[in-house]
Length: 413
Ligand SMILES: NC(=O)C[C@H](N)C(=O)O
Image 1 (cartoon, rainbow, N blue to C red):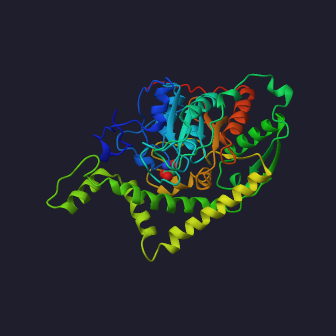
Image 2: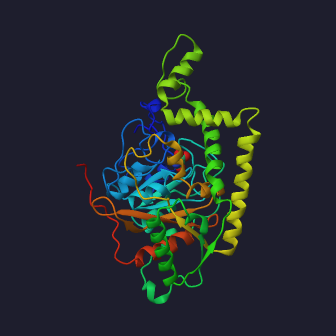
Image 3: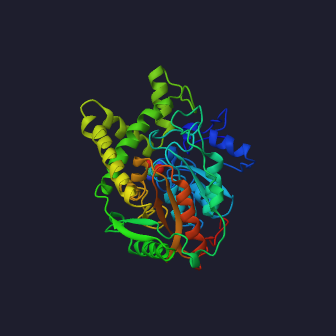
């Protein structure tokens, strides 16, 4: 199967091997039915940045499915497949999961091998899981996790039996989450977040309280610094990673009169505008004279963010936020306003900077489209606490009254 990463540059590229995650899935008996659309090289939040096509949101075909792994989210939401993989550098699994009303799991950095994943920003990239239930995403995680000699950053920790969490009991009666401390991140429920999203997430917190959790507000004062730090670091790493696409080693080649025009023309014609912009931004941030002011500073902010999460998670079992400040918006709405699109990643990027696991699951609807638009909320845990997140998510999902997250539209108009 071709692997284009949504880029014209890789239009005819057929990888000679499976990524470790895909190999493991096949070994577990999974049938790979296809590859899905995404923003070029994962750079975007709507899937409109694909060089090939725009993916529609199954809840309303005039809206984006989120991104960058929007094709995977839409395919699971429309029940075209049981589960799907995505890559989450700054929210690319969780935000589309939220927009499409499915479950999106971003594992701890190192839980899943990145071998064979097309690299965007290697210190942030994680392969994540989409499912139409928490159980499906957890079973998928179990199949793809583990150490891999081809990825030195993959962890040697044991893989828990994630599937053992998914048993049915009379949850509400028995207060199954009694004693669990939930910290609701104050900065994620303030100005700039849609009021309907805030009230859905507050309802989700009340539901967790009914299940026995104790919820308190926690403050992460550095939260808003995550967005600028992420875009500097991700762009910087991408400018290095994408230098491999030189028209020689991979993909489409544009022959010029001399070597430099072969590189230049292949890249000029192969990359889309968002990718070019990020390569330029990243190269600038890494260049002598600007390195200290941008790249180094962003790394320092990353440490501050990591420490503030650690402190908050020392006092709480999990942290909670919306998955995105809005529900799915219209195709074209933010396409020409990159800063507005970047701002939509505010809820997710910090988690990548801290390397933590997070689970997004649907918790309600707001008005819009033919049948309402799903809202997702995010549970963030300490490193390698996926088992806990899945348990809480499963109980939440099983006991959420009267919500069916099956979209009304399952085929093209
Ligand atoms: N790749 C991601 O996780 C999505 C993020 N919106 C980005 O463009 O970097």
